[in-house]
Image 1 (cartoon, rainbow, N blue to C red):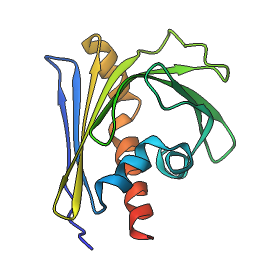
Image 2 (image 1 turned 180 degrees about the horizontal axis):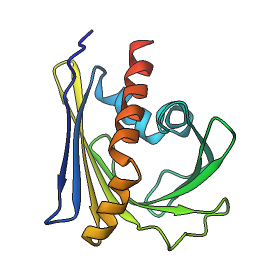
Image 3 (image 1 turned 120 degrees about the vertical axis):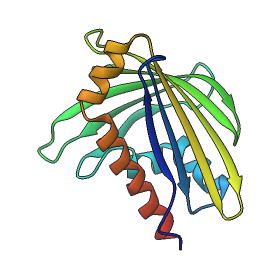
Image 4 (image 1 turned 180 degrees about the vertical axis):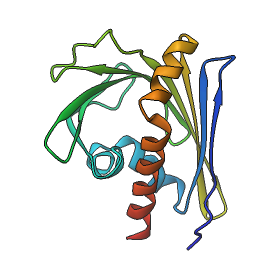
Length: 165
């Protein structure tokens, strides 16, 4: 198994965009499933020791995923993904937002536009994530909240899932 998997996290302040390119030691089908099936998402989407718990998910254009990040003390932070585009096994897009447990968007926090592309090269699958924010202050708020560290830990959790297969 490869230990030196690519992880590139770049912030572009001029375009208010985060670019994450990540390599996984798994085939495209397995990686796609891990990003699109709630049973697998809930195993890795939150940074440990936090857990992801999906309340509802309909993975289709116009569908949505409503989920909580649940902390070690039981605290919950709810989020919503509104799926805007799906090209099976190659790309999907969603609008991300913080919300309450019923999916009512919290307008005190910025929404972001996620564009996730998958490609297979040899025994690896590469996931290219582009997260666009409306303005620089939204991007800066997200980074300040620990997005880079949290997302990195979550992606390492996905590595663990593939390693155990």
